[in-house]
Length: 286
Image (tube, rainbow, N blue to C red):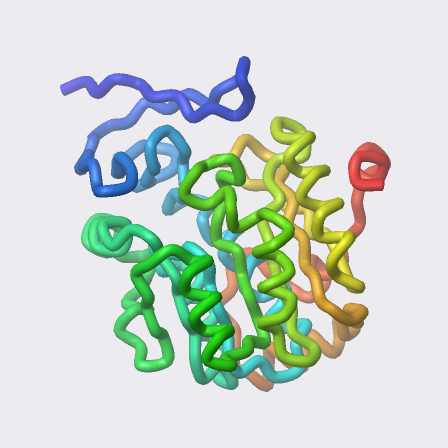
């Protein structure tokens, strides 16, 4: 049986075409349409409305970068907040750091948690079963406001979100919420945000970078390549103080101390190398 191709939009006039071998499920939740399909190149993948969120073949590039760059830059993170992250993959990576005692995942849509866990179990890898992980099903902004009001602070705040113009998460990139994130960090805490594609989403990437630049004293990029996202992808790591990364030797020592050995993408040399931008991206963010 042939299944119709689908297109993931990258820009108003550009999209990435996929030819699925099978559609596993399509369901409309209270918030969005969730589609899970299988392709020869990317394996199982899931989309929210028309946006591709993660695929089995390359999700490790995003989730290892999002989690381990800040977690290894921190000498001993004990608490983390993941905004979005309903597929459980970022929590899966953070659980590799034994010092983390509490990982809060603030996900809006319970159907994302349920369906990804059922059809693509390698993404969460049972991370939501860990007693160290607290899943909160509600709007991430409301979750953080409540946590902040209770006096809870975090060593890491990770934005496992990609669509900055989606009504469900656009407010999480506004200045007001960014300032709340900054106020919710412990001393030495780090925020890690997905800026997006510097090629296909240049204006949004610049706007978010400049917004963060006006709030955080320390700001560093990470430049990675994600095939299912159309290639080049930028992240931004921020802190209310300056960011001083350990040397490659120091990062190797932290990996050894924490017993982390099974990474497919992240390594200490790449930790430093991904912060070096080509000239056109330096100019873009200047």
